[in-house]
Image (cartoon, rainbow, N blue to C red; front, side, top):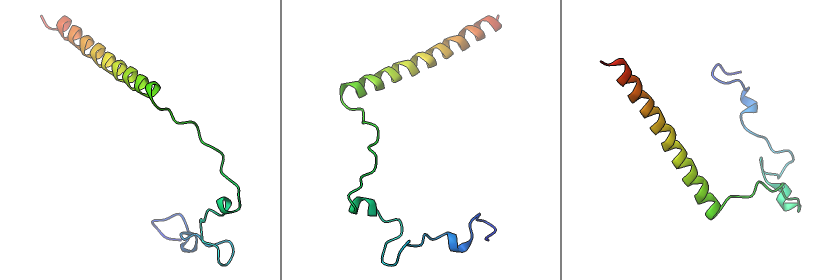
Length: 78
């Protein structure tokens, strides 16, 4: 085992399961099996609306924090 690594030298390189098969190959695609579909991507107007909402929300939080610091400084200073 290496000092800088938690794996032994023979574990650092993936070995093929069978001779002639590439290590990490996507044989499931070749065999007709497809991976489970991922979540549907958000597109179009819904995505724009989410981005605008997040932007407005972040500016509101920053504005509120700035106003809070302004009023705090105003109350502490004569």
